[in-house]
Image (tube, rainbow, N blue to C red; front, side, top):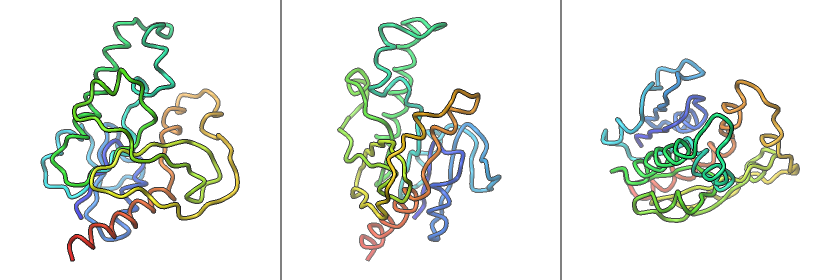
Length: 205
């Protein structure tokens, strides 16, 4: 498959598909952490018409879409106005909508649970297909992740382990906290590559 992994700078999901022989590329506004020549710096929306078989949106900006942040729409954080909060919501919803409605057969988007204002701004919106936890894929942590899936099956847990530590939630403040919070779990990436590859192979046969 030709696979585009949007909103990823770490290369974790891209490399999981590369390891199985797919023509996989990552794209983000940031350069790739691993220096891979399989990374495109830029807006992934500019690449959506380039003949991909699968679009995986690893971690789109979700601060204004997620249910946990809906309070900021009425009482904005220090230094922000209500108008800025709603403008950022519109921008985030437009990004999600562009990915969800891309001309690509198989689409997966990772995001937290959305609030109602975000849902009404996304074209052809559907609720998420499943929610997963890192501990279902070999990582002894809790971080609920929702997956919106188009023409892809829900992931089947591969390695249920003990440990229910909310590591990401307890990260101390730091300049790179946002980057570490968005970092993908290799166990989940491996499951995506393996299980969704099987779907494509069955369809090709």
